[in-house]
Image (cartoon, rainbow, N blue to C red; front, side, top):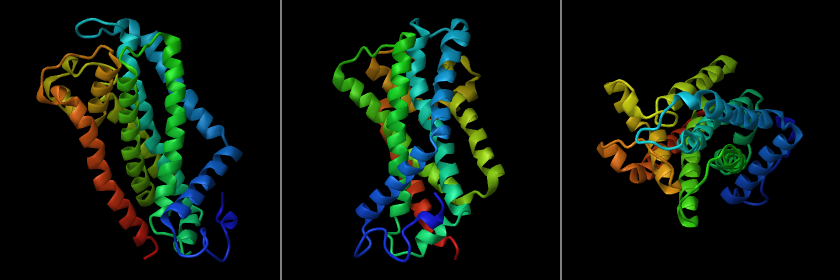
Length: 275
């Protein structure tokens, strides 16, 4: 949606700027964009399923789970977290595109709550994250994955996955505000794969060289993956380090730390645009 389609000459929300009202309006704007041009989002969903099928059927036979267990059940919690990581580039592209088209400058010149454009983007991305997670759950069930924990454990695991996505949304928002041009956005997209593979999402850190395995253990993605494997009742990798023993705690603390860093940075950068 171009800046010409934004409400002209007035507030997004009648009366005084309202964080809730303005955020809702901007969330609906993002949803309207997706409805008119669903191609990129459908492509993202298809890409996630393709990666799942590649590891489940092409590479899975050559990969062993430490301590035994089905590799597909080991894989799916990692894939859930990976799809949340892949969302960084989608957020970055959307925020960067608004800045390049002048939408961001238009919003800054209107009596709109300063946090609303950022909250609206994060809310829209979370809605898509829920859809993404639903698609991956269905794909996982189709390839043989099952959640063996109780309903409460399963909901807690899904909540941790979405908490990770909410934190990564703020990373993507900040990167979208500071990057310029398609080359910068491509660089952000390229970084997703090293960050994702340098974790316990696909293989156990114990199979990596010592220093590399330690880095993988401390990867925020690994905390979410380890905690959700335990909650789903899926096989884990059986590490004995302090990090492994505290995956549930770190699965909460890492996202909260990312939010505490990147939400204020995003707001500060947004306020400084055009200054």
